[in-house]
Length: 260
Image: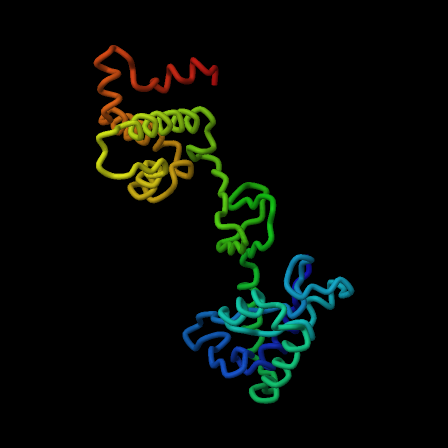
């Protein structure tokens, strides 16, 4: 995939005077401490579903000086989320006015700032995605930081290799235990508080620092023991045990029963 050249960003950096181009914004593109506070922004998006995308542009034009502007992260987000307000013409005018006020001739050290801005651009940003994104997966795109923009309220994360969620037997067994706990706990008419079916999964996430599906497979037995203990504390489980019924299957019996 094409990206802006170092020379283009060097020119753009000098054009910006190392300040966000948004009117009256004083945020530096790169702080004196070395922190990168700004971003390379495309006036016309580089992908078809992006803001202000122009199908008549060539790939070279999309990454050219004329289609780029340097903004702080906050204003980059604002212009892309309000594309109907921040039109192509408006952004080009903002860029021109800013260059007149803050632009300066290129300096030799500007190539350094161009390099770090391009390195920052390598971070993966996923927008309008309806498929899957693989992170830290062999053969997939790798990124230290992944920004996901979605209109949905929830982003689904597939469990990577080596986690409980990636193991069919353990993930099914833990769901079996969660189902039994919810069934028994919700049937207790003596409860003084309202029962929430998702509470047990949230408790695991709070105690272990991640959703159970994303925990290492080595934690599977520990998680199942925790759930078994919670089931045994329910009133219905004690009744079942008193009648000679097991309140849940062991892992071995569950795997054998379902031929997993």
